[in-house]
Image (cartoon, rainbow, N blue to C red):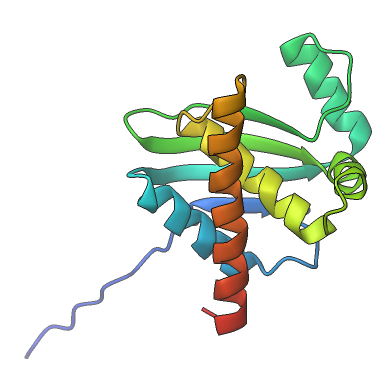
Length: 154
C-alpha cells in the first residue's frame, strides 16, 4: 500500500506592521519594501514597523537616544551581513506634521519615512548635503514603486 506524504509549508512573515494606517495597502507595501531591499543587494530577515503615538516615540527618543525632542522615526538596527533585521517606530503625528510643512500628502510622507528607516539599515546616511540628496532619491524611487504596484494591484 502506498504511503501518503504531506508537505507542510510554513510561511513566516518577514515584515510586521503594527497599528499601520488603514489607508496603506499592506500587501503592496510589503512587496515594495522587499523589492527596494533586493534592488540594493540586501535581504530581509525580519522587519517590524510599529506605528506609535507622539508620546511613545518621545519616550523612546529620551530613553535610547537621550533626545528630548519629537521625531518621526526611530530605527533599531540589528542587521548583519546584508540581512536586514530591525525594529522601526514611527509617529504618525510627526509624519502628518511634516506632510503639512512640506506640502506633501500624508500617504507619500508615510511612505518616505517607511523607506527612510530601511535605507538607514542598508547604510544610507543623511548627514551631508550629498548624502541627503542620495537618500531622498531612493525614498522618491520607493514612493513611485509603491504607486506603480498599487495601480497594477501587484
